[in-house]
Amino acid sequence: MKTDLWLIYAIVTTLTWGIWGALIEIPEKAGFPATLGYTVWALMMIPCALVVLRLTNFKFDVNLKAIVWGALIGLTGAGGQLILFEALREGPAYIIFPIVSLYPVVTIGLSLWILKERTNRRSWIGIVLALIAIFLLSYLKPESMEIKGLLWLGLSIMVFMMWGVQGLFMKIANNSMSAESIFTYMAISGVLLIPIALWMTDFNQPINWGFKGPYLAALIQVLNAVGALSLVYAMRYGKAIVVSPLTSLSPMITIVLSLIIYAAMPNPAMIIGFGLALVAIYLFSS
Image (cartoon, rainbow, N blue to C red; front, side, top):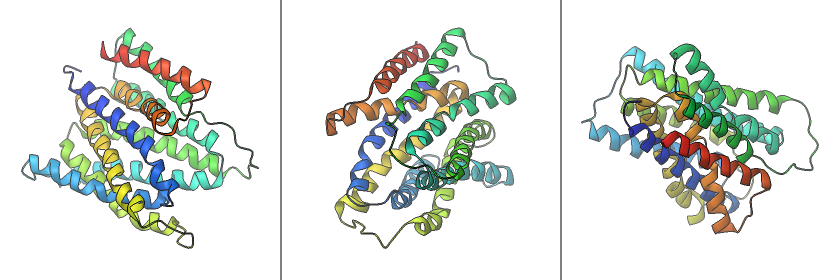
């Protein structure tokens, strides 16, 4: 990491995803399903891709190697999101989210093994604190629901693995293709999976098609798309073992905004996680 650009992009991802996480509840609570929110997100990736391609005079990697890496990155990310929707239908969110949130462990482990990435002791302390913080920040109050079967657990582990290997794929691909091409392939993959999201949507339930539905969702999902774009650049300039845990601390921003917007007081675990996240960010940036 010879430049601080990785840190700038990583912080942009953390901020945009954190703000997105706090605001996305508005259209969902107004009656716009999360599966349709995915559809809007995929469509919002398109203008972002066009903007970055324009900056490169629409230079786009179309060789077989680029297509394969682009498809792997896009499908592990967008596909994991759709699988997460199904996991949440089958099982308890208070267990699923902590499992899925720790996907940086996979990225870190694979990056150490395959990419031989190394860092200093200060950053390692930050990585450990960040992983603990990620788990605590994703803590939810246990629900009083009967848990049936283990399908949800298998799906959760699948998302955990997919999002973890996506970080590795993104880092490797940055060595052979442009970041703009990577993001464009992510956008294409997201759009290709829209039919699955529509199939998963229960159109028999009332859906808000007004401003607080698809239109507000579009404004909010732009933040998600920008965060994904910044992540690609962060992986280009930084080490995956640091970028992955740092960008996964976005829930700390969500907690602050939720407190301001919804007056939602975080539980003690989240408060501890928030403090550890601040220390981790300080260690990464100093």
